[in-house]
Length: 117
Image (tube, rainbow, N blue to C red; front, top):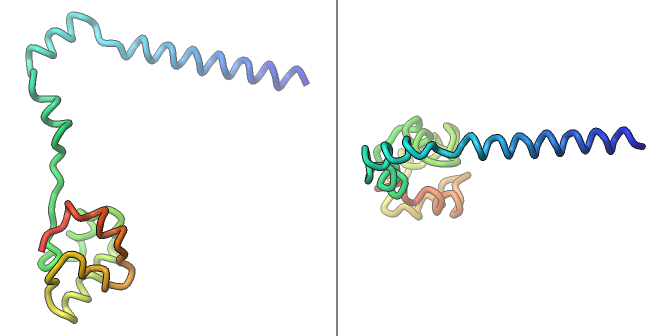
């Protein structure tokens, strides 16, 4: 009975020590912070604020291009989009993708910023 308690105590001490060590070692040195702030003052906030998302045309892209850009779309779903487009013609609206088997509204909403006509 005492052995599991000792093991739990050791684990909690080890994890606590690791967390404490990481927070101390992750703190930047004052001299390096000043250099970083003066070297590129606007580079970090700009990059973090506006991540560039690649857009793909659902009317022109290949299955490989669709699967590479769209979140949650593998090669099989991308091929279904291309097959639907070849059979019925180009899409007139992005919401029309919901007519493709395996493509739901949630997937369309998740990828709205990644798609164009």
